[in-house]
Image 1 (cartoon, helix red, strand yellow):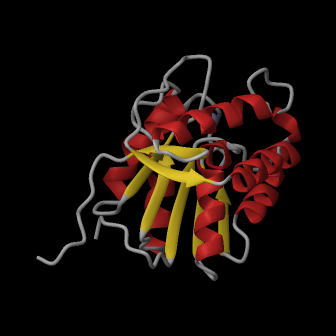
Image 2: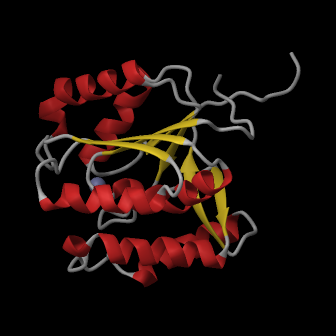
Length: 214
Ligand SMILES: [Zn+2]
């Protein structure tokens, strides 16, 4: 139940903000969708609904999930205020959970210094119980990069494609000082070193089971 075999049919991806999912796990999404044609991907974002950022997110996730059966929900919680909107966030996750029983959940990780990311990460196991969950990382001013324990190696081609899609699909974020190719590829290169690959995305996994015979 919380182990990951080779046949992934359904994935839930969660973000507090538009672009979190793509930054944290865009390369892994590309790999998952290319290896599992027809994969069901249910994406839920807590903030940005009804704004230009929602349009960006929908186009970006379509590009990061080629050939997937993709459903995107973008809610309208205010940015930076998740603790005060706990019930709305929980209800959003519960609603999604009622519609899907994924093989894998991809979400922020509990050690993330941003309160919205951390809050969402804490909600995930209260709703998706017994689901293998990969907690992604996002580089930021707070300096919260830790020691992840799970890696998805990325080829140079796939890492470059991820960064190109980030640059292409989120024009509203280009002005941010950290939003550039060097930052994204730099972190991916370091995570690649840690798993003996050229590039990688890294995740925090708090619980999983082995798939050996019982
Ligand atoms: Zn964010």
